[in-house]
Length: 393
View 1 (cartoon, rainbow, N blue to C red):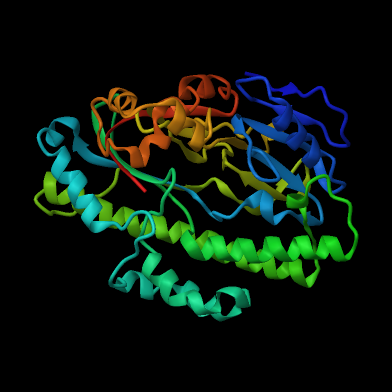
View 2 (view 1 turned 180 degrees about the horizontal axis):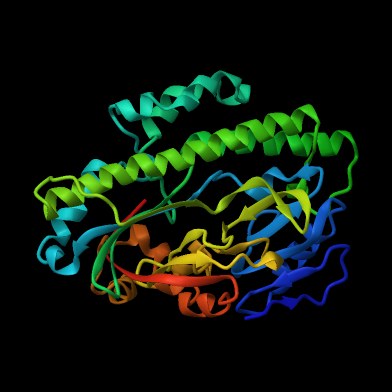
């Protein structure tokens, strides 16, 4: 669908691909961001947009000469990884429960971490720069090493999926774990302190920013890039382990070559050129979708997911949605739905069906089909997936 321009008066307009009318709080959040003096051209809202902290989740904000740490958020580099395997659905028959149990035994979830650090982790070149990171994380290198190759909690997941051609896919969702969170909190706190000290007017304290070329900006940008790379590698390490589990059950342990691999961030910032100018693009719950970029748009744990290819729509800063987007908060979902609802809505999926994952019930999310319909001008669908195994964080 073509975007609509929000009927608000701000220095920068807001273009929305949202599949719902924005509520008053969402509109206020969009207005706050679009009112900042350094916002470039316009703000773009993706179809899955919903309330966040400071900025809306599902928003793309391009800025000149400044960056907002809270707009990137605390799960720096959070994103998706998916591989298309040479296996077919029939090979999974009778093996789903064993596969799920082996995944849970191989990949730590929630607050858990690896007992031993893999060689591929210790060999990561990023550790050489650890001593340059914010002093607030200097004592966390051991924890960061043990957490690389772990899932985390909340809406993070690992899934075995089958596409419409009966091909088996492996897909996971995770970010920069504790180290990214602590780095983000340190810099967000610094930005807020600077705003107070300088009496800078902000429509929301969470929109505190760093001015480009300042020492604090450079420190944040360095740490941001490091955490984004950590998140990327974290997904690669997990995917390699995930792949070995599935190969054990479907190929007798023999290594196979993926037919397609995609690894993409959806909470991050990069320097890019748009409308002929170099800008800082913050995608808070959005995937880069330049022409021929591959992306991953997951639904909820009972819905379809999509592998997509970007169309390079410049009005969206070459971006698309990062998922279905929440329809209701976690606390509201727990009050609204029962365990019976969860069992019904995840029928046919080998997954946990207990109150610990009730807040992730499919009904708590928007319709992924509507979200996809609203961004037909942003991406084309390459593959449609349905999960058969889901491991939640």
